[in-house]
Figure (cartoon, rainbow, N blue to C red):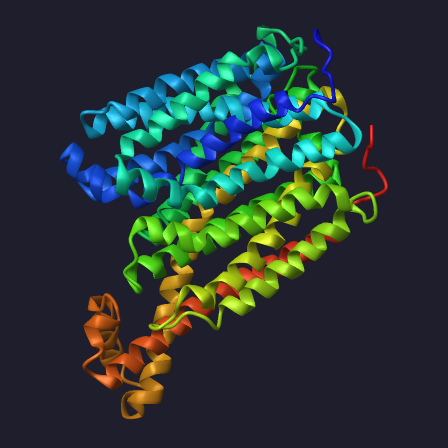
Length: 507
């Protein structure tokens, strides 16, 4: 390390956290702007959705390679290269005149830039602070992405409703300039390996495996059979990658990913917890936003406002979490977070109806966000706690890949669960209101088709029976989503009990 960090200064953390924020914001704020982008660029919805998906895909696929490049290029230098490249990408996206130009700027350039920056944000913070300050710093960086993902719809709604979606990218460009202006406040760390140590073959294998995995996940709700084939192929290729890396290390060569890192229980378990946490948050946010826009017919701005309590809860409890570690262990605080999140999900499972108001949703969203705040704030710290300094870069890449995969999986998996919930709701509604057709699949299919044509309460208010049927389908579908999310949080709770407290470093 060439520069000594003044640990009483939080400026390096602020600069690094800004990068985490805009990278995560990029994945969500355009969700509410699709129709306007389609009109402005004279394209179609599927093309814009593909661009959004490829941003996530490219970021996740290059994560492991980026983690290794930190050792070769230097983590600060790689971070700044990523920031500069991100600025080029976001500028290109902001001035796009076609869907192709948007794809190149947003999905390709920003996707690669995000992959270069994300692992470096964790390892830079981990190497810059120690003790309680390290816990606080990692907590802030750990939840910054989650906060950005949650506030994305509101930010996108403001930009689209009052200005233009292009200003969203422009705001990110301003943040990039701030990062580059204050770059000297980020501590420098010397490279620990040479270019000859780069495992190019391993990088290619991992890249193919991760691309197939994310691609399979993203297309789950569109082409289930093809998705399963892609996911199985990805697992086989990633297993081959692991075997190749083990062989490479045994032969005395530097691996792209040191598989021995997975022997550390905290890193192994913590990465899974992060993956499932981001999956739960992203999926729940997607389902709630879809309900607010499709059923209650709210615009992008109001949808963002209603989901804001989740963001506020997430932020407040993430800030509180590090101070609680002086009295309770990391895993106790995280376990409490799981219980809060489960309570929030179960509360929300009873709130979704045709006549739901904002006041019905605020408590559950706040409690869910609060639980996730406790969980996400401490998970990165405890995941990397027992990893030696020379392996921090590799471990941060593993952690970041888990978060990125979780974000990718959330919308796709919850989307399938929502469809299953609707089908279950149709069956329940037929049993209650048309018992003579309980075993009639053709009739249920007809009800499902009619339900899909219904936009909101105004479409059905003239027919009381139809209102009751639609209301029951919505209740059952959203309840199923929230119950499955609660089950996932229950799995996370069990995983937190496997974390080790005794070896958490305080210096």
